[in-house]
Structure formats: C-alpha cells, structure tokens
Image 1 (cartoon, rainbow, N blue to C red):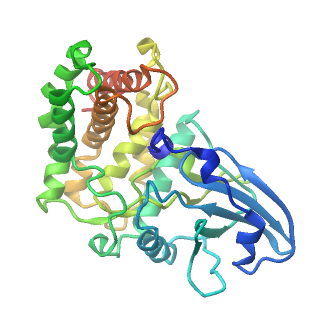
Image 2 (tube, rainbow, N blue to C red; image 1 turned 180 degrees about the horizontal axis):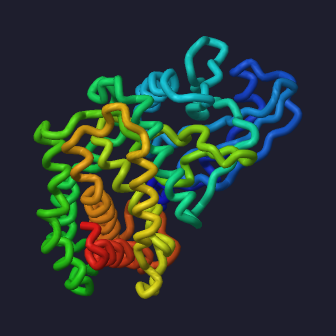
Length: 352
C-alpha cells in the first residue's frame, strides 16, 4: 500500500544525497567492499552494504512520511523480538538507529537465499501468502497492540477518510469534482457498509492487535531454495490495529489479476481460486487466532480495505494529486476506478 505514499513534491535526489560509506561507519562497519543502491522502494533510500562479515541493508528513513522515526523504531525493535531471521544492527551508541544533520538511518541484516515476488501467480503461492500472514499474526498474538506507537494516525479510520473526502468535494480545489460524479456517487452509496470493520474496531468490538498494515506479497520474504516463507519486511507501518486490516490488504493485492493502476477495467478481475487458497492458508494454523468475530469478517475485510483505497485515491484526485505519487494527470482517478471495479468483482463472485 505504501508504494505510492510519498508526496510528489518530495525529491528522491535530495533523499539520496548522503555518503553511505560514512553513515555505515557509525554502525561499526569498516571493511566495506561495495555499496549498491536498491531502487525498488519509493519511501526510504535503501542500499546494500557488502562487508567482510557479509551483506547488510542500510536505509535512510523518509521523515516526511514518518515524522517520529525514533518511536517508529521502538515499534520495530519490539516486534523483531517475536519474528524470525530479521534483526537490526545497533549503532555505535547502542541505539537501533543513527541520526545526524543529514538524516535518520538504520541497518538490517541481509537475509541470504531470499526472494520477494511482485504478483501472485498460482493458487499455491496464494496459499503461502495466507499462511505467511497467519504466521506473522500468530507470532505477535501475545502482544498488546495498544502499547505500540501509531506511526500514521488514522491510517485505516474510515470515518476520518470519509470526512477528508467530503471536504475535498466541497472545496473542489482543483476543479475536478464535477467530472467524477459517478465515482463520488459510488463512495457515498457504499461508505456505510464499507465502514463496518473500522467502526467495530474503533468501538472496541474487535481486539486491538499488532498489525503490519502493508500486508502485500512484496513485503514477504521466501526461500529461493525451498519456497518456504521466511519473514515479513518493511515494518515501518507496524502499529495497533485489527488483523482484518491486514487480511483485507492481502486480499486486495493478492486476488486482483491486474495492476493497481490498470485503466482497462475489463482486465480488473478477482481470482476466486486465489482467494480460496489464500483463505485456506490463513486458517491452516490453529492456535486461538483469529477470534470468532474476526474470522466471521475475513471476507468483508477485502471490501473494507479496497474501498478505503478507492476513497483515498479519489480524494487525492479531487484535491489535485497532493499526496500520492502520480505519473499522469488521471493516474489517481484510474486507481480509484480500478479499486471500485475490484469491489464489483468481489460482489459478482459473492465474496462480500
């Protein structure tokens, strides 16, 4: 979900303007054999650091998105005690990060023999995705989610997002509202039912757990050799929430047969076989998770998170594209229509 969440005014060249070797020395690395940029992410500047003791991942955190990175790192440090394989390398002063006038930095270990995938390609992969998410949730099930810092306030708060939307329509700063009457109607017609999970969570009817909040396939590491799930990465949005935020995003990103910005809506289809495999994988572990109420809302979570993304894309389009990265003038509108079509596909196949 966070692939696009960087304001378009934020210049990547400015973010990358730092001496990676010099910063790495603050984590005790001296025998540095090579530094290589990893350009796949859009939020943080990321480098692979090759040393005499193996490879590591150095990141400069985007403090325009995460404005209290110290507390975010507290969240990550707590969660890493519970999940396997991934760990932070402490800075020389003992903290899990280093900061100076040039930025805020951290170092992770590099997990060898690992791979990420960009798209679900088979029912077997969908099953592994579901199982991986449940392994993550199970590992953190004993933790009190409310003890964590909310790195992005109101991230999945539907009432807050709907208020933003209505304000955008009313102000119509970019003069676009009149051109998207059908899409505005879709939001208003479906807002109440799509808000149920958010309302139940805010009302204390669903457990407050530790959730990833960006539970897409690209954030799961698998073994190149065995294909087994290894661990979750990109933990910046780990914070309090309901696990239904994660299952919904898994469904939204894993069951769609088209990219999120595919403008040919005929190609936007929902894979029922992927959905069923994903659901089977998620419920293949039995250790008290999820609770009955959470389990009963699994299917509906797909509607909730897909709707909130349609809502946010459309809101940003009406506002004049001030939040999400866009490549063309109608990019956010295309994304919004894409997500609306995916909801229609869920309805067509009686998933929701």
